[in-house]
Image 1 (spheres, helix red, strand yellow):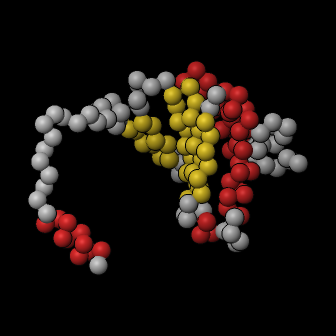
Image 2: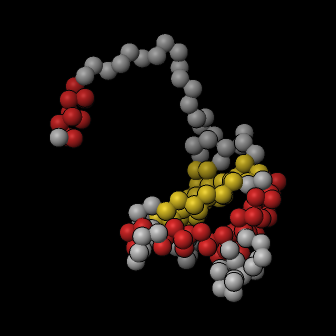
Image 3: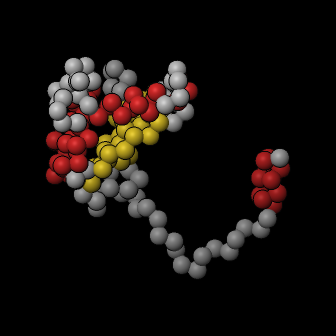
Length: 141
């Protein structure tokens, strides 16, 4: 049925073009660079020079489809904000002090960690990301 509905919609006349151009993303916004490192880590950089923000996102292969019990993937994702190098102060609290916004999204097949920071605090944010990768939960009470 979905295919038939899509076919019927495709036969409707096209809407009239707008009299004025619709504003969209500038060419600068859609410029992206992708690099795959030797270990398989994929780094994608999308620049928008007009915004003083940096979004750091990390997508891990694995989500709800692989969890042994419902809720385990989400609980495991929340531990990502802890490191053995900062046992008394979570990574999330350190990001909060920088004025950053952090999010975790657990989908069926991926877990996505996103942190948005001002350009001025990017070095500190990258240090936190490094700690999460090199000093994970081990040793945290």
